[in-house]
Length: 394
Image 1 (cartoon, rainbow, N blue to C red):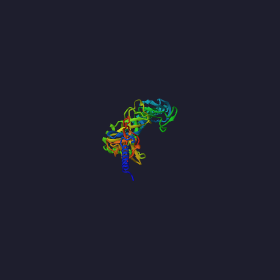
Image 2: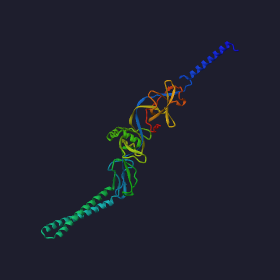
Image 3: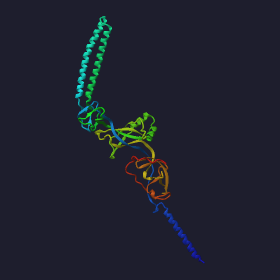
């Protein structure tokens, strides 16, 4: 039989152990407990952000003139330096003019003979008309003289046209620049026989201003037109947009571009439409064929909820965010994402302004777990555009 005092001591000891165990458990679930993982959080705020678009662009000359021969002949001189700027009217190539000079001289001689014959026919016509009025000759003789005079005038007209054509052909032996621009390499050399079907001798590109050829998908194009259905308003809005050109080395071109034109139709193969932006090009630093990226602000998103991309995780096509409450407990929520703004994503559903989300350390937590929070330091650079596609809402 157990002594009453021993029984009392045993019960008291058990109660002390129970109190100690309970206190230990309470300390383990405390927000400041040493076992809680440390995470970096940021407070979500609503803000206006520019909806920056970025598209791949190919540079091309504002005007590209293919220089071809208009007459057949041998090239006797190349009169420009390849890769330099030429002015309208500058001589590029000279085709041997001697055959055309001879043709012009022959055409002029033929014209002189025709004019002499016409003078005689005109005199015969006048004489025949006078004699016919006096009833000295028959009407048939008069008509013959009239027809001869008319044929003589027609011969003169034809020979005058032949002289003009010969003069034009002689002029075509001098191949000149039709525009101001940068002349490319010559595809034919001195001594080559060229003709109108032998292809371009060179190409001249007007590159100040220079065009950037950009393509937009059918979806973005349809969205834009639906927001600006009035053609007059749409054209006026496009003229207000400033375009930046990011070169292949990552540097931004110092001059802003302006909208120039949009194509009449979409490409049936790619489902995209092409438009053109022009950039000033003093010094001809940009050349046709260069690649770059055109960047512009299409609109400003009002009161957008932005979170760092690292705060968003994807699970089987859905997106979720770890939210930390006032009690430092974690709640994992499904969200829907909108546009992507550089290192940030827009959250359209599932999150409110003022809530705290985990940017780093979410992998160490689970639903309902307690964490120690530390403020996340945002990147030093401003919100920048991102060319990668934004996630689609599930």
